[in-house]
Length: 188
Image (cartoon, rainbow, N blue to C red):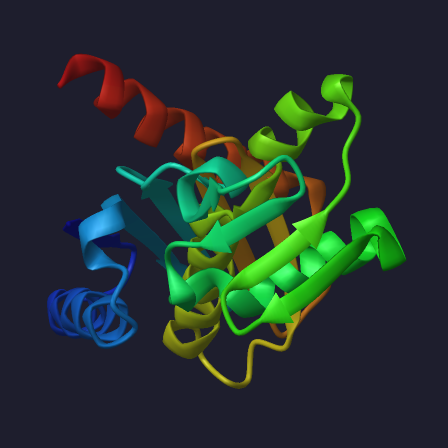
């Protein structure tokens, strides 16, 4: 993960760089982040942090964590996902889905429902990653900058923080920073 800070003095920039690296390391998301860019404007008390998301593992589907044993019985093959799977099946199929034992499920499906069932997403790591990145951004930005404005793109997040109202000028600056992050990705 590359971290760059601009706008403050040399000491502030170096300190914020270390804070960014340490915070995202402590949250366990550094491997999934390509770059972090923090823009500091001490005069207007505005902070913009932008994160370019890198590698994220694929979503876990029902077919990845179950094995069909009979037409109506499925065995959970990865117990780590059992609670999420059971909650998903309860929401989607209601009483049609029954837990027979700790790792065994009974579910009656029509022939046309089976492919859709196997493709259901049990867990999407990207959702968890975005939550953890936003938490990290919140930890990095100063506590006094309580007015926040998040901006997101498919592979980037930005958060503007200030003590004052966030202007359109600052939103445009954040979008500019995010585009800059995207361009760097295309060059690599």
